[in-house]
Amino acid sequence: MPNRLLIGLGAQSGSSTATAVLSQNLKIDIDDKYLVGVGAGDWTTWNSPPGAYIAGVAGEAAGLGAIPMFTLYQMAANGSGNLSGLSSTTFMSAYWANVKLMFQNIAATGKPALVNFEPDFWGFAQQHATNGNPTTVFAYVNTNPDCATLSNDVVGIVGCLIGMARKYAPKAYVGFPPSDWDNDEPSVIAWMNAIGAQHADFIVLQSLDRDAGCYEADATASGCNPSSNQAWYLDETNTTTPNYSQDLAADLGYHVGMGGLPLIWWQTPMGVPSSTRGGTPNHYRDNHVHYFLTHAAELAAAGGVAVVFGTGNDFQTSVATDGGEFQALSAAYLAAPAQLP
Image (cartoon, rainbow, N blue to C red):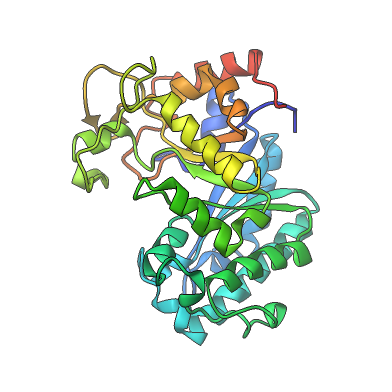
């Protein structure tokens, strides 16, 4: 890929990524797709033979001039935050079989791919750990023949995921997403290092999983029921709190604190800036696209290599409903991109 901050697209409510790219003549570097579930109906069953979905996504990405990014989201199969599967040999055997199949199919494409491991899971695991010790969160790991020497805990899960990537898909680049829900960055960094996430290839950062306006509207029907009354909309002038200078300083903290790994912002909301709070379904306000694509050099300076935009919910603003904002700003960015160090 070119030596500049890369841009990508993930889930788009009301439109597939390929449809959005082709219909608007967009240029993207990364095409992100979820791999969900364990058991009946999981991602391995979506195509035939099992696991062929990987090749389909890789083919789509290649056709768009991009590389595929797979967001593995299997740990949430029993419900977000439900960790009961970790102590089930049935669940974990199926989990590891799917991971192996994923990497084997990535290798079969003969091309590089990105893999984002289990958003939110690491935060839930931290909440369940005794005194922040990841070895206190049990999980079946060494029942997997590929990881027979690893410990049966969250540290073993991380080591197993990285080890299987290296063994089965050496062209794959893998990363873990910290969960900074409690805004205690030092403890999150310490946790991620304790589980071994610094031995991956990149760090996945979630800018915000919904448009800011959706949270402002307390739009429960749109999947936005905030647990606090914090200010969600960041100040682009960086004069009031919260703002982008503060946000990027925190992001730099992850880059420095986790072994200098590069950052990839993921599932970055796509709302359009507005002075009016809130919004309506598919038209909630946000300004991440505007700030990131007009201040891309700041992302690179914080340790970033890529930003992937996408909707965390079907009712969020997308490239189909943003009035052409992403189309115009991404074109302007690519005409004068931010070079990487």
